[in-house]
Amino acid sequence: MNTRRRVNEQPMKLFYREKGQGPPLVILHGLWGASENWLPVANRLADAYRVILPDLRNHGRSPRAAAMDLETMAGDVDELVASLSLPARPALLGHSLGGKVAMTLWLERPGAFSRLVVADVAPVRYPPLYAAGHERLLAVMEQLDLARFPTLSVLSAALVARLPLERERQLVLKNVRRDGRGLAWKVNLPAIRANLDRLLDFPRHLPPVPPGDRVLFVRGERSDHLVPGDSSFLSFFPGARLVQVDDCGHWLHAEQPGQLARVIRDFLA
Image 1 (cartoon, one colour):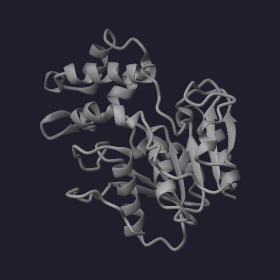
Image 2 (image 1 turned 45 degrees about the horizontal axis):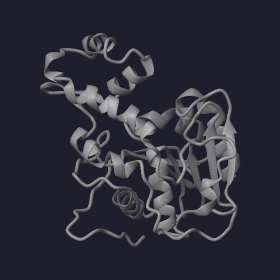
Image 3 (image 1 turned 45 degrees about the vertical axis):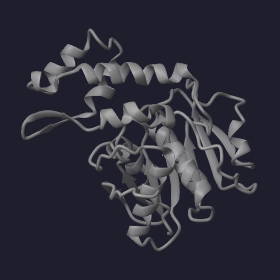
């Protein structure tokens, strides 16, 4: 693939995992996520697909950098796919922030991927209400001095007063790792803080693709990120379909991995 890089920007070699054999499928996680979060879905698809799971820049085990807009992150994924010399065009799946990266790459590189699945996000600028939750998590994480906590269990107990919701606490804890000196962040907090507004937006200058049936949008039944009747994605992806995964919210890959895997398998097949 011909990767497109911005002037003076250094290439980034993403960390990735692989599961299974067969036609390639690239899965991109969301903000505050990592490749490991999608293993429950990947394991259900590994009998039929070679599933490639990168950590996006500033997440997990991938490198860190100040630049963090959707087009730069799409370039990272494009570069990774090119480095793998895959025998066939891969399918592409992205959730939340990963869905925006996947849509950006699909629009920038028409024909480079066989199919696109976008999980619970739209190609729109999300309003301040959506930023508030990320801002709250950022503020808590920025105020934590991880050197004060000898173990994850001690950190978890300290978080109860700051983040009463168990899901939010788990989101923070999943972004902490142990290194030789103690606990450390898996995410680049300053870069996320500096670029959050860009990540909630979408590059509206990108040209739409021709009408076709190679794009699928999937929403969680209880999610407010992609609501019933929302057709905003048709402005970029005319002909795309929208399906629903029942009994789950935005984190459909964690709440309903089996049902989501069946939806993906049916579409790719």
